[in-house]
Amino acid sequence: MEQNIRPDPNIYKFPIHPLKRFNKKSAEYKQPVEITSFRYDENRQMHIDDRELRYYYPANLEDGNLSVGYENFIQRESEGPETIHPLLDALIHIKETRGDSIKADIISWRGIFTKMLCTPYNRNEPWEFGATLYNNKIFIEEHETEQARLNRERSTPKSKLMVYWGYKFEALSTIGVPATEIKSQDDPRLLERKNSIVNNNIQYCSVSKTSLGKNRLIMGADVDCLIDVKPPYPENPINKYIELKTSKILKNERDTFVFERYKLIKFWAQSFLIGIPKIIIGFRDDDGNLCSLKEIKTLEIPRMVRGKDKMWDAVTCLNFLNEFFEWLRGVIKIEDANSSYIISFKEPYQEIEVAFCHNKNPVLADRHLKPFGKHL
Image (tube, rainbow, N blue to C red; front, side, top):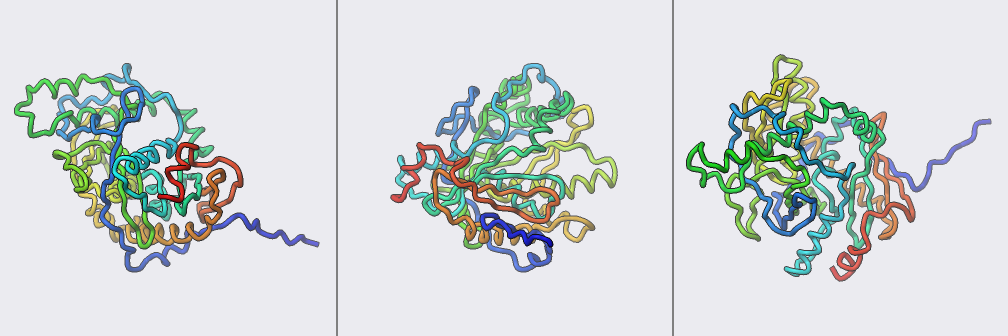
């Protein structure tokens, strides 16, 4: 006689398919507004100021060997995903210095929201997040999946070099002053960026608030550079940020399909979520030589793939994320700073699973409990 196995009452599942149920009028996504920013210095120490802010100045293709300086590359010592703690420290600083309340339903990094937003069209990239509910806010941070760990440990010398190419392109495309201050190509600040040592400890992060449908969101995001001088708060400087990307040159129809199907959705999601209007793509060859630059507008990317076979749809992504967030807020109900939920997406990539973990892997640190307590 077969046993009737009852499902675990602490495990919840959100189905991805059929996607056609998300094909309707788009959920409203409000223009993001930056509420603060912070930086990491060359030693990965956090500071609440703008000293690492960079400005866009087009890379010189003649200096476009992206492998130059690799032997001096200074890399972060920590491996795996960033905790949410620096983002929360920045939010606490807002409360302490400006007295602003932290009004949000979900707080996380932009990269986590990006993975969620792209999930309807994800077929081979598992992800796992940890979430803690505290003071009616869901705090989410990323866990390293087994696949990601294996990929990191098995990384080849060539794949490590290709990661460097992205950082080198950023170094070749940015300067420490607004571009209007550069009067000639002989300016020493342009020569400085060509010969600078790449250090990926250095990072500039923007923190913005927005909403998707009825879901109020706060997210932190690594931003590459500004196109112009950054205005003071509470004005919105996000529309002056630029995202920098590298990609292999497109030689044939297959290259174009892979670029549009798998890269453009991520480029769009990353920039759209925090309102970055422009993306500069540096196309390079297989040896890491920069061949051309292309500027695309974030809001035009969905139209570039619309109607093409086996492509993705931005409205489907937004409606999916809106309904997933509403569902998530309904199943994450146990408010306990010392407990967490595991949110996972894995093979066969048909559903998102949420499981309560009791007193295990809390997302918040002790220093966050009082500031994010009931008085906020």
